[in-house]
Length: 65
Image 1 (cartoon, rainbow, N blue to C red):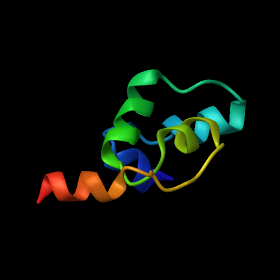
Image 2: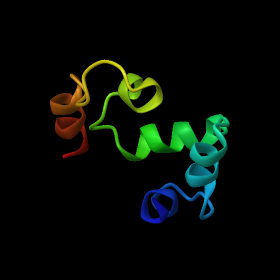
Image 3: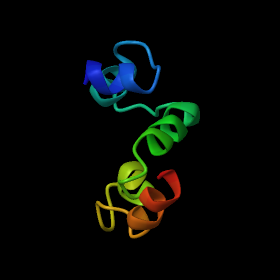
């Protein structure tokens, strides 16, 4: 979990504490997560529902090349 937090610029424990205490995570960390990992569906990342991989992933890759 620490590596994931570090990858989006969050301090250690942001997600761990939220999960342990059953509390919310600030929206800025969720936005950073979705932006850092566009391969994954935002709906899946935020709600745990839907398809894991984004249907737009092939288009995102082409735009970055």
